[in-house]
Length: 275
Image (cartoon, rainbow, N blue to C red):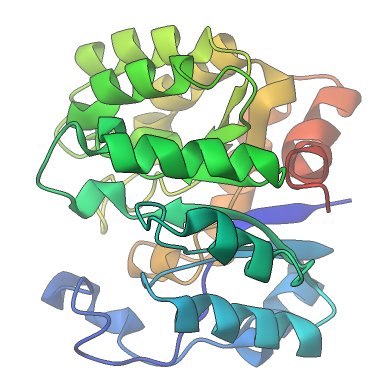
């Protein structure tokens, strides 16, 4: 079974989606389940986890509604204000939406490099554990040091790093990212998504060889049991196609056993998100 552990839906709004820069103009439009259904059929993908792209409660409601109408959406990673003093109450209310498996905050957009270590945010993460929710970590490499301290505070919380923490593939920067990623991977409650790499490379001229050093590092550090295939569709469309992402991943892991390949392509996502 193949599960896409990371993709997005949206009704395009130039204000809400202001992060879509001119260089990404190809995705300045609506992307809904009907647009993905044929792709999944062609690529033999069985289901997905829909991940928030906007930090509002209405975004989570939007994804929950889509999931109720779409059989291949197996789980939702939504947004909740983890710094809210009433976080327990907010999570209790959301817990009735069983399709919601976890939450994410767009930490990469925070100016404070230690945002994850704020007292109020830590209180929110503690509350997630009371409801068995997962947490997706979205950061840039310069924020990885705080990630290391952050995940060590919650050894029982299930974390997953989105997009390998977005290494600077285009610039060829590797050593600093690799050193901290290896330390983060020592925390066995942290997984990593094999996703989002082609958009960290040169949009027009990337090759699979550009990506392999980064993929090799996380395979060695996290192992086949803590890596999750993700397309990052439709963001991936600025640098290629869904098929490009899936083929690049499958070609990279074909040296592994069939069991290990199945874990990365679907089983790990099922287990991590309790799909």
